[in-house]
Every structure is written in structure tokens, then in C-alpha cells.
Length: 255
Image (cartoon, rainbow, N blue to C red):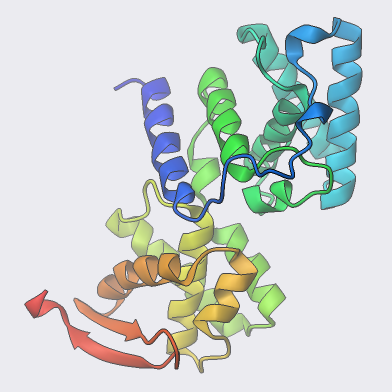
């Protein structure tokens, strides 16, 4: 499998994993009239639309101008290789900005982008465009899968200790070394690692708390955390109760 095929496969895997938590691709409230088809405007107007949308999104999300410039470079490279007939310029701008964030290790998620005001698409649509951009430009897929930045962000938002943050990073490192991280959403993996760290160090946040901050479901956290826990405890899984958020030890031998 060549590098492009590998990128496509890995992005397909992560998109499939992210779809577990995704809502409808395009909600009824989306104002699709605000989208500009790429083939419907002249080059000068296209530049204005993309530059304006990049600036608007960056301001809303607190993204620096240098990252905007990276996004614009990605857009220019993409349109030099890909016919954009049928592509909405605003979606492409957002996808290029999200891709730039991944390249520069800025821990913003697809949900952050989809939550911006006057956005006429969801994270599913965004991720599909990101996949096209990444595979067309031959970008390193590892930038899209790294959960470490999300760990720092979520632990900070939850007010968790440095000890828990460090432990969550260790959990991801152990999982990566064991090869169980491929094709999984980095936000879900980060949330699960934080939950594992919380179990080990004082339970300063509940599964529900972590799920709310990471914008993933508790089911996603449980699935990822159990995979990680098996590695950490040598085959013994600590399962969390849905209501009490208490934990109990079970053996894998009968599973």
C-alpha cells in the first residue's frame, strides 16, 4: 500500500469512528443558502470568500493569523490539484483551517468548528472535506490522530491536577506502543485516557464530566477506556457503572 492509500485508509477509519457520535450531516436549521459553490464565482471573488471565511472562523475560535496563512496555503495547493466544482468554498475554508490546526498541533476538534455561528455544515461534512484535502496533498495522517493536545486542553478545562494530566499522557503512550490507537477518534482516546488517569489518582472528575468537555458519548469513553485498561492492568478491566460512576474489577477470562 503506498503512502496515499495509507492516508486514505487511516482517515477513513477515524471518520468512521467519529461518525458514532455524529448527529445528522446537515440539520434542518442549516442555512445552506450562505454557501458559495466553487464553480459559481470568478477567481478574485473566490479568494475574497475564502480569505473572509478563514478570518471569521479564526476570530471565533481564537486561531492565530499564522495558522490562517497556513490554511490559505493549503487551500491554494488543493485547488491547484483538484477541480472544486461542486465544492462549497466556506466548507473548504473551514476544512483547510482545521487541517492547518492539525498540522500545527492546535487541539481544536471538528465539534469546535461545527459550533461556530452561521456554520451551514456539521462535523461529518467537515471531516469528509478534510479527508479529501489530506489525501490530495499527501499529508502525514499522524497529525490528525494525536490525542495529546486534547488531553492538555480537557484536563485544563476540568481543573484536573498535573499528576492526572501526566498519567493520561502515559496511558496514550502505552496504548500507542501496543498499537491499539489506530483509526480511533483522538478526542475519544484522550477522554478515555483522562478517565483512566482519574481512576488511578483520586477520581476528581466523573465519566459524565469528561464526556461533556470532550463532546463525546460516555459509551465512547467506556469502549476506549476498557481497551486501555486491559493494557494497564495486564488483562484486568475496571468497569464503570453508568449511574453511580463507581468502578469494579472484573476478569477477562470469561469474556
